[in-house]
Image 1 (tube, rainbow, N blue to C red):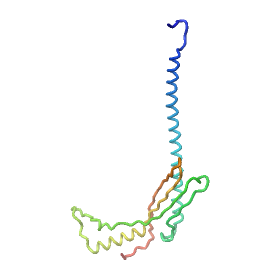
Image 2: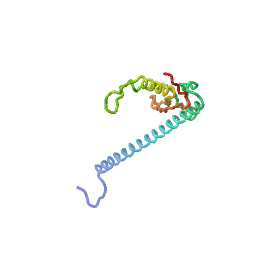
Image 3: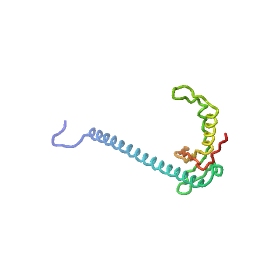
Image 4: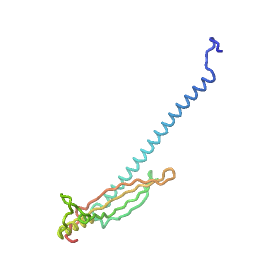
Length: 169
């Protein structure tokens, strides 16, 4: 029985208070860890996006005033300090456009369109021109994180408006 003149906490009450405090502190620590991790990943994505944009800008500068035939298709390398943990790869690819009349295009009535020699020839010439004057530029940034390879790729599509339009198939 407790004496009314004595005030204080029992051992059991102190243990319960410490357990509640420990749970609250562990929740706060977990939340802070997640916040720090999110900030780190956001910073990493910002750096990677900036490096990819830099490489696309460099590609535009390297190709300015040149035809696609004069440009190196594949380039790889590492960034200089302070970004030495990152490497890059740039690929310039030819895009093959499909002949839309060969894919069974339909008219307004839902029936297959008639294919005339003239329409086939025009579509083939246009498809050939688009394939020769359009390129896909893919930049990939690579790095290691937690011992695993990571990568981030962006693509742009370039059109050479100065490419000669030829009426040959």
